[in-house]
Length: 96
Image 1 (cartoon, helix red, strand yellow):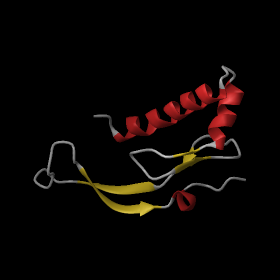
Image 2 (cartoon, rainbow, N blue to C red; image 1 turned 120 degrees about the vertical axis):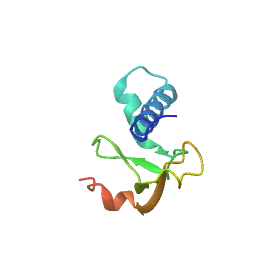
Image 3 (cartoon, helix red, strand yellow; image 1 turned 180 degrees about the horizontal axis):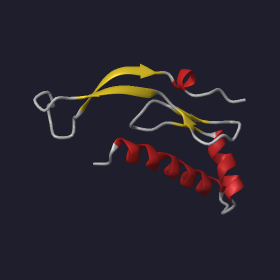
Image 4 (cartoon, helix red, strand yellow; image 1 turned 180 degrees about the vertical axis):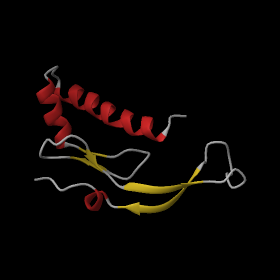
């Protein structure tokens, strides 16, 4: 099971590789342009948007989580409780 940090790193790279395949080119600029056109959605979070300005990163909702106490966890991998969901457009700086 990947950690939260690992889970956050893998989907953007997979999105980029899919965009390069759709662009049918090995040129990084064309692949990035194709990636920017697509609104992406991941299974692990709500829809994300690639920044139009070219600023690195994706805009997505952020979760405030609390680590469960040992007796509260219903199974081995359910270690966090979501306390709050913050909208991505309120958390990240706006595109300028």
